[in-house]
Figure 1 (cartoon, rainbow, N blue to C red):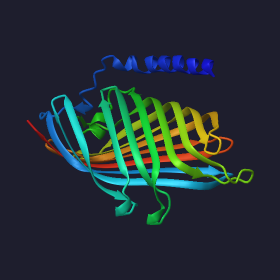
Figure 2: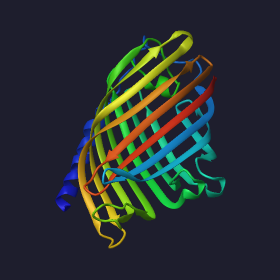
Figure 3: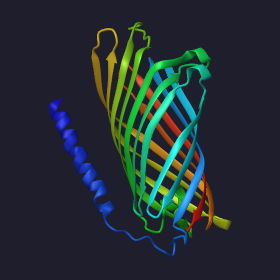
Figure 4: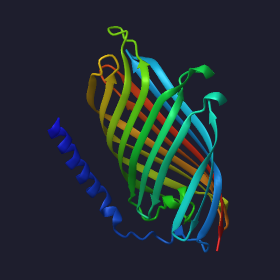
Length: 312
């Protein structure tokens, strides 16, 4: 196990160097395809809807599921090269007003001409465990830390124009993407029971995942009339998973290593005018983890409406 851990660390460092070092080199985007605005500063506002769902399966059947959905109001802007946004929570959706869950997190995104890098962390406390309001589980806590990035191979495509609206895609264009992802998740609870045929009293109180993934994808921006655009992005590739969960009865731990495919999807559409702009973006992150005793599925959906104005 020590040898495997040490080998994984060296493999991780080598992967990061190979992936990001070429991306840090200067790559000028083609001005015939990508235009800059005369107004460098912008102020934006909008809404953000996030839906997080975790499902566990035992003996091929769904044994338990958790969900947490919330709506927030975002306010942000950019002065020159520096931008910042903050989301204020408005409402928990799917939970009763007496049993509201708590969500907190930090999301840093860097859209450069030839690569995208995202570092995000979230802490979710309280999940709905069923359709009824009294099925709310305040003891369930999920922590997630993700590092994700991809390289844009074609300098004629700007994903900053589609997802940040600080550039303008002038002519429809596409590009291949090379992606890398790192993720750590841990779920804690007083007890989550998963009755199985040979072990009816099986229950866990901790579930962990370590993930390293690579991907190949494609993005394309369709430029329509009157500054309208639509940009789908899809990435798929292998993912290495180390899964650990703890049996509540005797505190014994299971450790499973798995290799499975992983898909990530993004979509952006809107109108990117000289002064006024608006966009709707959607990101989908499904995940499946299998083991001999317990399988899990995680689906993370994020929808954002952005409305902004550029000024001198």
